[in-house]
Image (cartoon, rainbow, N blue to C red):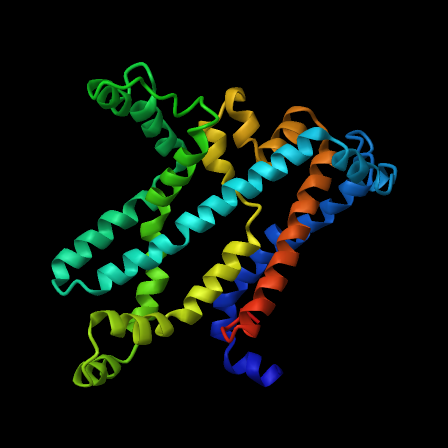
Length: 298
């Protein structure tokens, strides 16, 4: 062990900042989980606040808002997964068929750019586009003879707008992994298939998709592990009390009861519940992927 450290000390020094970052920002804060089992008092601090056992969990599960925000979180996350997860795969497959390098690189650059724009800027753009007063989209709708649509204040249209804007912003960035997986497929397989008479559809089904199946299964596992992460930044910058019934999720609820109302212990209990569900889902999905012949993440 010591010999390995001495031999690769430069590599370990490069790794050290990442390890320190992981410990300081991911493991040290985990001590705060005890707040879920304490009646936190700001003057007494975490250590000296009294233990209350499962009090906050009982209070949480009896709160009618808990079921609403949990259902909204699952609904939005599942819609994102159903419509958003296949989209980067579809884009990667299309880009993989482009043979003009300059055109391909230009398209890649254009679809990557939205990922680097923060949600607060995207939210501002969406408000300009979708507002009922002078929004460009509603102006076009009125020109076609229809009534303007309240995308930002309607419980019917707000969630579809969230899903669509998330796909437009992140789908291009999601293609990177699949394009890398596609680049790892041996070109000789395609050549052999073409000699055997396989058309483009056959090559897609029997070579391309199996070649990126490992990447797809891993990304699916990671996506399901975060099924309760419905996009705090996006929703927080776009929603209003008018759409709480359909768009208030666990993260925004934690923000309100924790930071705005000062119920730190209750907010911690809700956050711990969310993390536990995510852990269970990633274990189940990883096991299911292996049983189906795919690759897990461990």
